[in-house]
Image 1 (tube, rainbow, N blue to C red):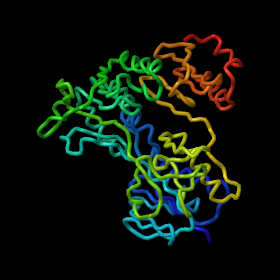
Image 2: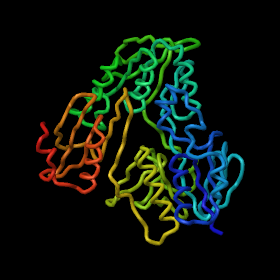
Image 3: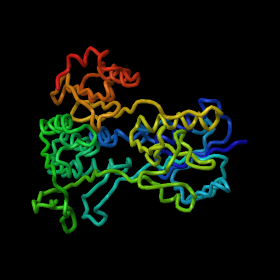
Image 4: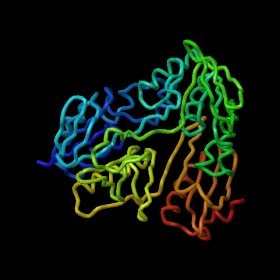
Length: 394
């Protein structure tokens, strides 16, 4: 009987297992996860897990009984240590597992440039992180967030909802400018400012000071910011070190895969640990919920079908901040032409075009328009065929 091992009980790992069973695969599935909790959804960690204290049970993808009911051997608290594709063997902290095919779904961990920081300096990746951060926020007067990306701004929004003063320090001149461009990103920054967040941009952190606990954040210009809590949100590092010696190609971007998700002999990779090649051979790492789900669906298909599929869907990312949903569709970077249907922080509609076609959109608070944009971009619609483009302004 064919045996498939999934290393990593992440979103991508669980969705791969689901996809295999949904397509009728009746072989052995082993799902190995390094956390003790049932596999759970991570986007709420920066939001409702902080504001409402959601538990592992409410965030879990499935109840515990779902796994044996679907013939999935779920092994929690077990971390992948070494992979031998030639022998078809995965070594973990607790066992050795043989496989016919293996899917790498070990995700990523927060990048932390301050490993020796005082107490009170947090990163956010696990439910345990969220619960500890929530507990400290209850008595926090001033939170400093290092990094003005999505995680940083979402935590800032959650802290403001709890009445905490928040300062965000961002090394770029404009938060999210690498994601949205210089004309759109400032509007998202205004959303944070409108809700009482102090943004300090174009500055980096030189030191974190405190004896027993964090007391202040020192910037590269000498400015000192008093803080009794710090959240570091400066990106993520793929968990691929355990693949050293496996013969697979890895880099700072993750496990290298072809357009079908194959990383090597009998090995595939999905989610934050993977970077997939496009049709031109260029590698891309997609650190988003929707991409992990789509990659898992494709790999589940490719594991058991002769006709292989590739990732061809339009990128879609969302972020919930300050009572608004920010929807980002397609390509919103580079040299695109940008036009606005509306440009207020709580009601934004920015459309991006290149070579006469709609390639991207950033939408806030307009779900119907977001759905339209996803279809237009997926269909590579010419801007002359989009009435809304004609009404938009530069």
